[in-house]
Image 1 (cartoon, one colour):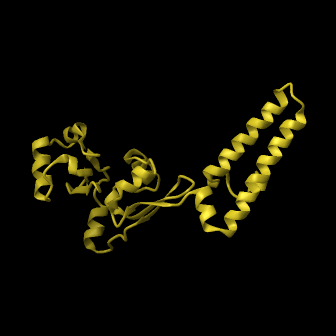
Image 2 (cartoon, rainbow, N blue to C red):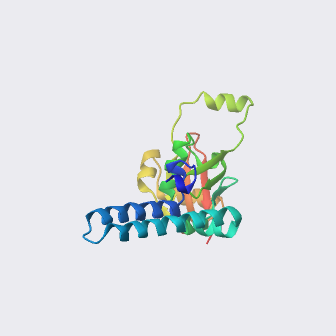
Image 3 (tube, one colour):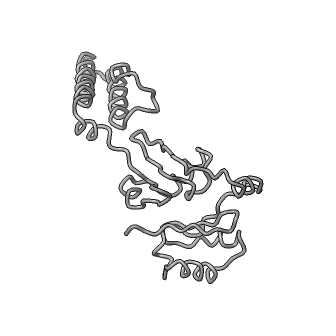
Length: 203
């Protein structure tokens, strides 16, 4: 692992992790196999040298670095969920909401930018909080998680029951904002103030 550079285990790239697993597997095979051990050792050394070589090239070339480690992906931009980028990264709304909660952010509308790093961690930049009287007043209200009402074009009936509303009400609300069908919406939720947040599908 030291040959890969001084990085935390959690910050290793997918490429580094694959090489680590392969080296561990080859080590186990070399011990258990009836073949001469030097064959396994040569395989491990070859793989390790290849990894060091790629790591060295990554330091010199951005293209090699992106090929080996991938590129960070912007998931949320100015409060807008980029569902096309989420699809490319094979990242879903459940993943997003879990990682936002880990950052103590309950509502997507409170996010200025969210970037999915090459390590799989989410970097979140919240919107600036209001310091006016309204902001102080809101901070005194009991905290409640936003209730998802639409996810990927599908109505969440459990969420509607939770807030005591119907699909008819939801249809009227989205039509007020220029949407004709639930399928046009990637994500919609209602917060503790009764404010409806809607994010349109990108495609």
